[in-house]
Image (cartoon, rainbow, N blue to C red; front, top):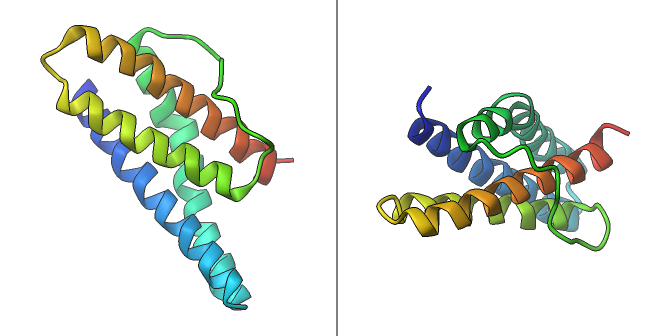
Length: 128
């Protein structure tokens, strides 16, 4: 898969996962535990797929093996939502700046940091 398609896949999955986790939090706040769990499970499936495949493919394409993360308070759903949103914003900016190599290089690092942060938060919340 080429870089552009991988970035589109990353953008779509991160945006959809973010949406599922937001819906999960709204349902939970409304007292609808069943819907909250359903939406959370859908978000988890998307993030798990990103971690296993897309994040690694992007690292390879960008030739960046950095494991650093963005700062965050502690692992929670809102931090996960924020990190997924960060991925979407960085990827959208990268695509919009496709002809400017300097901006692309800056955004590559930001995308990797956001991916690493999402992975770390996700694993803390759902795999421990």
